[in-house]
Length: 296
Length: 246
Image (cartoon, rainbow over all chains, first blue to last red; front, side):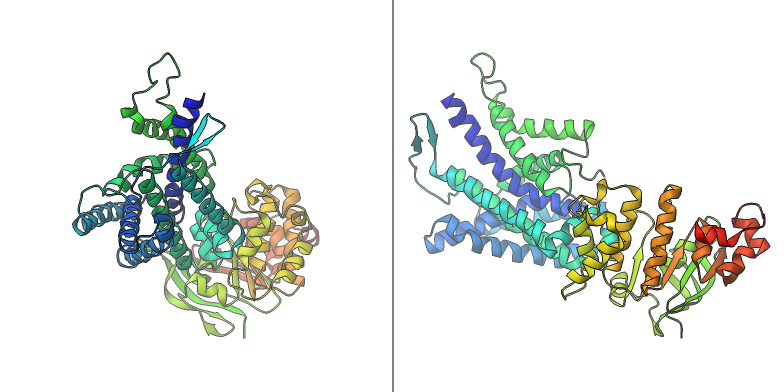
C-alpha cells in the first residue's frame, strides 16, 4: 500500500497537476481562438529557460523567480500573437494550426540556439522526503508543486467565475460570434487568453523542471498529454482540462503498477502511450469529452 | 427624422447579393415587423444594420448618423441591440452571467437594470444561477432578449423570436415584445408568424426577393388581400382584432 501511494499515486498527482496547468492554456486557445496551438509546449520550455537564467543570475529558489519568468513568457507570447496570429485572426483554422506548428519549431530552435541543448537543473541536490506516519514519504518538491498548482488553479477558477474578463472568456468560448454581437471586446479576451495560457504554461514547465530536469524538448514532450487532457475534459472547458490533466497523469503513473502479479501492468516505457490511447478513445467514443466541450 | 432608416440598401455576402433594394424605417416608439417568404432577405436586412454584411449601395442611418458598414461592436455601443434567431445565448453561462455579458460595454453600475429585467421576465428571476443552456426554448428566448435589453438600447432588433416555440410560448413572447415596447424601446422584428406579428405592429414591410413588396400599417397589411394570400393562409377574410389579441 505504501509503495502504491509513494511511488505511483503521488507521482501521478504531481504529473497530473503539471498536465492540468498546461492543458488549461490549450483548451482556452482552442475554445476562444479556435485552433490547436502546437506552440503551447514551447511557451512552457521558454518559461523554464527564463526561470533557469533567473535562478543562475540571482541564486534564488526557482519558485521565487517563477512570477518574473511567467511575466517574461507572457510578454513574449503577446508579442508572438501580435506578429504572427493577429494578421490571421480571420483566417481559416488550418492556417492558424500550421502557423502554430511553424512557431513551435522556430521558438524551440531559438531556445536551443540561445541556451544550448545540454541538460540543466533548476534545483540541484537531493532532498530528504517528509516521512508521515512511517509509510507516507513525500518529497518537499512534490508538496511545493501540488500546492503551487492548486493555488494557480484556484486563481484561474476565481478569474473565470468572478471577473468580467473571465466571464467574457467563457462567453466567447461558447460563441465568438454572439460575443461580438453583444459588444464584448474580443481582442481583449484574446489577450487575456494568451496571458493566462502563457503564465500557466510557464508555471507548469517550472514545476516539471523542479521535478525533473531542464531540456529543450520538455515542452514538446508534454504536448501530447496536454492535448489528451484537454480533449478528455472537453475542448474549451477549463475545468475539464484540470480534471483531464489529473486523470491522464494518474493513468500514466498507475499504468505501470503491478496490478496483476509482480510485473508492471504496462512497461514504463509505454507510459506516454496511455495518454495517446485515452485521447484516441475519447475522440472515437465521446469527442465532446467529460465536460461536454466543443466538437470540431 | 426616423430613429433607424435603411435607404435603398443593396448587399450580400461575398459575391452573393441578397438585398437588391430594401428601404425601411423605424420611428421612435414603434414596433416594425418584416415579413416575407423564405430567402426574401428578411434576416439579412436586419444583419445589414449590424454591420454583418457588405453593402454595395445604400445607407443606414441611426438617429441621422450614418452607421453603414460600422462593426458590430461599435453598433452595440451606439445603442442598437440585436437578438439573432439561433445561438443567441451563452449556454454554459448562468442566466445572471448572460445578462451581465449583455452589459459588457457598460462601465457604470447596472444592478438596477438587472432588477428591471428580472421584473420583466419573472421566470428568469428564480433561475438566475441556472446554466442558460438547460432552460426551455421560451426561457432561452427571454434570456436572449433580457441580455440585449441590458444596455437599455435605442432600438432592439429581434430575428424571429418565436421560431421553434410552441403556440403558448409564442403568445407569451409577443406579449413580452409589446411590454418591452410599451416601456419605451422601439423594436424591429423579423417574423414567420405574420398574422400575430402584424397584429402588434405599428408598421410592416413585406420583402420578396430582396426588395420591398408591400409597406403599410399592421392593420393595412392584415387586410391586404394579396398579402393575406401570400402569408396569412389562403386569402380568407382575417379577423385582425382576434389576431392582435392572440
